[in-house]
Length: 40
Image 1 (cartoon, rainbow, N blue to C red):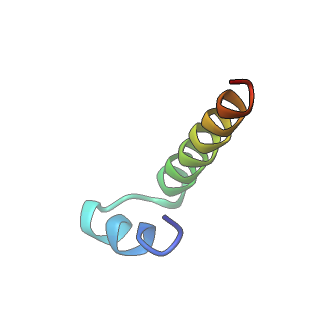
Image 2: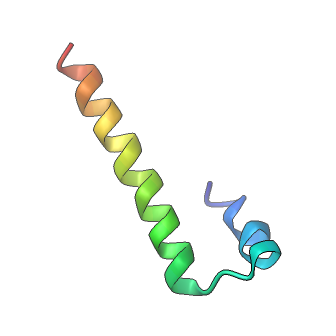
Image 3: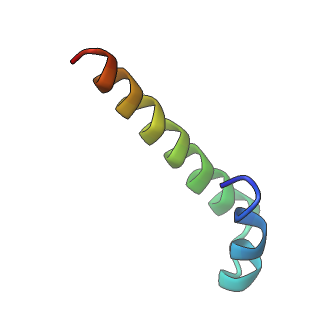
C-alpha cells in the first residue's frame, strides 16, 4: 500500500490528509484482523 498510494493519490487528486486517512485505515484494519485471528 505504501508504494501504490503515490500513483493513486495523483490519479484521484487526493491531498496529504486524505492519503494519511487511507493509509491509517488500512493499518487499523490489518491490526484488527490480526488481533481477531489471534483470539481464535
